[in-house]
Length: 128
Image (cartoon, rainbow, N blue to C red; front, side):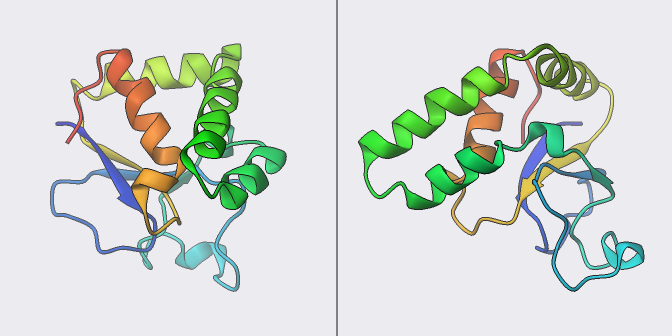
């Protein structure tokens, strides 16, 4: 019953469970009532998204040094109590139920969800 790390809007796997959107903004042009049906997310958790300033920094990162700078700053944001407690909760729940955590980015390696994967793994989460 692991946590799946997914791209929002992609087809769901049969054992994925609840899909959590860790994005700053809801999908554009999609009615709220359609988010789950269109495979975006069931629950929105913008607390696990980078701040707007960091989103811009991540999108502008063109080399390893810039990406690593983003990663360090995002990890610092995720040390804030509310985000840290939420990550702890998800890690604990991963041993009881399946769920998915996702973002819109096409490439996970250049997306904050790769950092979320690391942070969840550090907390002992069961990951897919």
